[in-house]
Amino acid sequence: MTNRVAVLAIVVENKESVFALNQILHEFADYIIGRMGIPYREKKINVISIALDAPEEVINAVCGKIGRLDGVSSKTAYSNFVS
Image (cartoon, rainbow, N blue to C red; front, side, top):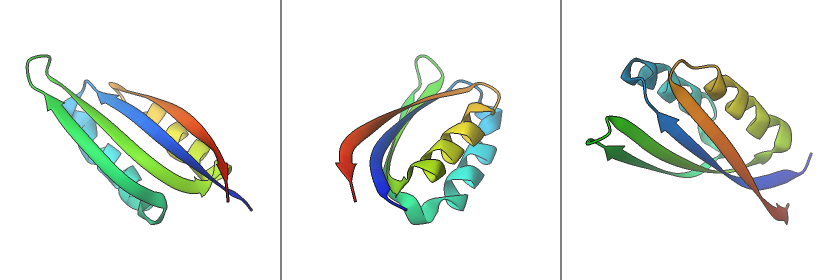
């Protein structure tokens, strides 16, 4: 199985989904290279970026689970790097 490097962009509009989001990220912690969270207090949202090095199936699983959370949206950008 080959790994891909990707960045997952997440926007959290519903604060009540943060606990579930963190549980998902913890579940896939072995694949996370880094994480940056920016609270945008004026708009009452959080913007999070997650760098991943994982098989494409794992990246899709993370995105799918996050996409089902209420008030959370996400998009993934893949690099051309394959290891």
